[in-house]
Length: 253
Ligand SMILES: NC(=O)c1ccc[n+]([C@@H]2O[C@H](COP(=O)([O-])OP(=O)(O)OC[C@H]3O[C@@H](n4cnc5c(N)ncnc54)[C@H](OP(=O)(O)O)[C@@H]3O)[C@@H](O)[C@H]2O)c1
Image 1 (cartoon, rainbow, N blue to C red):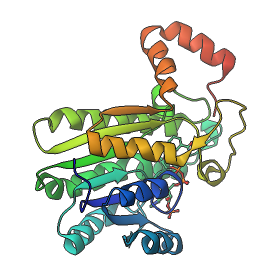
Image 2 (cartoon, rainbow, N blue to C red):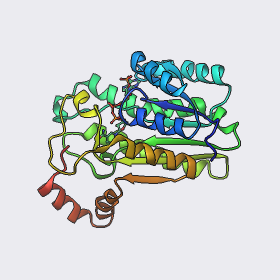
Image 3 (cartoon, protein in one colour):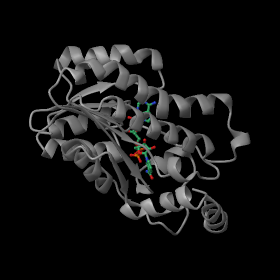
């Protein structure tokens, strides 16, 4: 898909993978719509890229139709939607409150589904369009201490794949990017730093490169880094072996 002049909405653009993705899309000539809550950071990125800021809290699901209306009203068309915003939660499941569960589900799963639903008519109105979902290796392998986060990322993954099948033959292409451990504020924000020695966190720009390829080349699925396909393959083909290895060597984030 041609990105020069395309209107590209990026959620979670104020930080980490979203900010790196916005810069990559800007370099490719896209017109950016930058979404997040931190208006100071979004404004700084908008100044750098010539993008527009549309701020809001994705935990407010009732606000999503108005958000979509604001985007289509201001820009008229949407060619690209990058559903990237997300939050983590790590710790024993029994210590999660109902509010914690709701927030993890709403921000990571319901909000991207609802935003995609609200923007789909605009995307379908374009000759070519792309929607990318930033999921997580946690949703493919399962992680102790991140049960709800892993569950919603798995849900987002299979939603994306189902939608990809459903929209085959239309101009709208769906892709998922499945990152491993990425060097962003994600871990500090969830209140539990990443403490394992390996795998080492990768730069956010590497994931942004995959998002760009998903849009530009219509790539359906990319693990970043690529070797993450291996544990997914082992889990799918030899689940008993996978469980034994995960229990011995990790399975916790
Ligand atoms: N870092 C990793 O190791 C890793 C691994 C796999 C997958 N991921 C996924 O990658 C995506 C991006 O995460 P990141 O690593 O770049 O983390 P990050 O630096 O913490 O960025 C998260 C982004 O999401 C936005 N966001 C969070 N809650 C929001 C809300 N309620 N409403 C609107 N925006 C909200 C934040 O914006 P504001 O603060 O402005 O609201 C921020 O821009 C997430 O979906 C995450 O699950 C990350």
